[in-house]
Amino acid sequence: MFIFDIPYSPAESETWLVLNGEDAKPFRSRGEALRYAMTEAARVPDVSAAISIEGADGQWRLFDRSMQPVKT
Image (cartoon, rainbow, N blue to C red; front, top):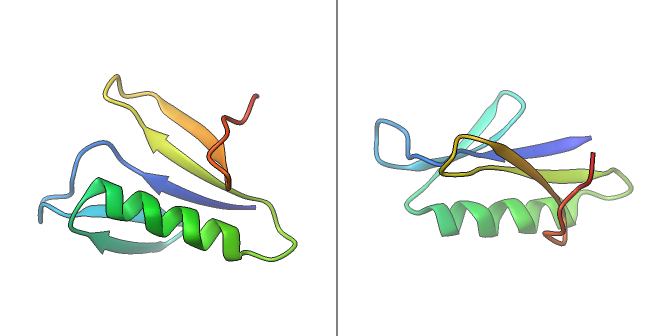
């Protein structure tokens, strides 16, 4: 399974990072980071992909590639 993590706050360089395993890709805004994660999750063939987003409350929430909440 591929999971794209998007933290609530920007990194020290004031960029938002999309984390996927050991890879991290920087973006100028959280919206850009989310659009990238959605596009990449949709491109992963025959493998489940999810997007994990940290909320302002510090809780991480998991969404599928169509941004529907994943129920655990």
